[in-house]
Image (cartoon, rainbow, N blue to C red; front, side, top):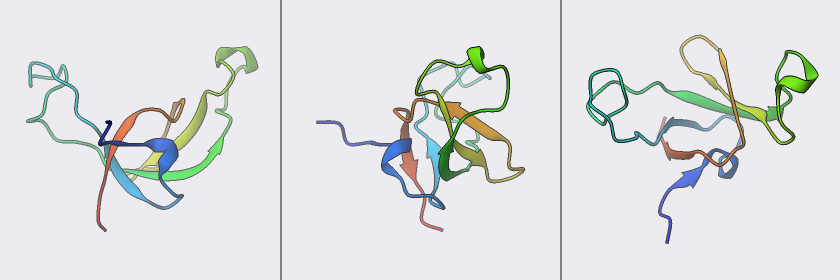
Length: 83
């Protein structure tokens, strides 16, 4: 059983961090480094050349600190934050 939610499971306005991936904790993933906070948005097609993105590849969230969007398929595992 998967105990993590995905980006697509969250509601617009929810804040979260992406589930940290194993790494060397020195800039290549890891659990000890700081994690960026994101805010879930309504899915939208990313700006850019139309053939640059595969079908279903959408912007699902923006960084809380500066509003920069992040794109994906909505299947990335996340840890919701109480705000």
